Image 1 (cartoon, rainbow, N blue to C red):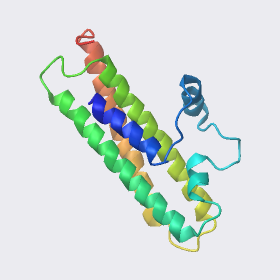
Image 2: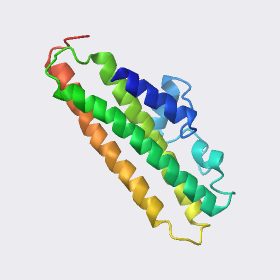
Image 3: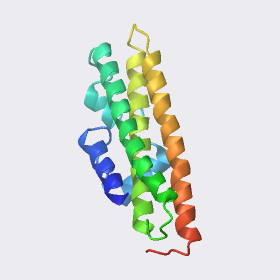
Length: 166
């Protein structure tokens, strides 16, 4: 599970959906305030894909493709976590596994936020139906909510077993 979670975190950064964190302070600021960029300025993902400047049809296609990929990746990591939960082996996961999965979940949330922001920026310029992209981003949000539940169950299992396996 740790390997899958770490691979997802790497994929999110390598794909350019989120900016690589500068450490705990940057991550804390992102979680508490939503973004680290200057207020009113486009965020990392929106800037990178040209949400305010490039052809709306290209930007929208990019957002939906990236969101689908991010959602698929999170689904794979969550499937790993759920298989650990179903496992009868008390040593199937440890604190590091739980933390890795939670880190993957945070990266997914950051990516989702970037996709939503980019959509908001391009939607005001687009003279086309953005509902399919809205639906995809909402599906990603639902996946993130489901992953949160799985993360809570993993944490409960880890704490409930008296931190066995750490």
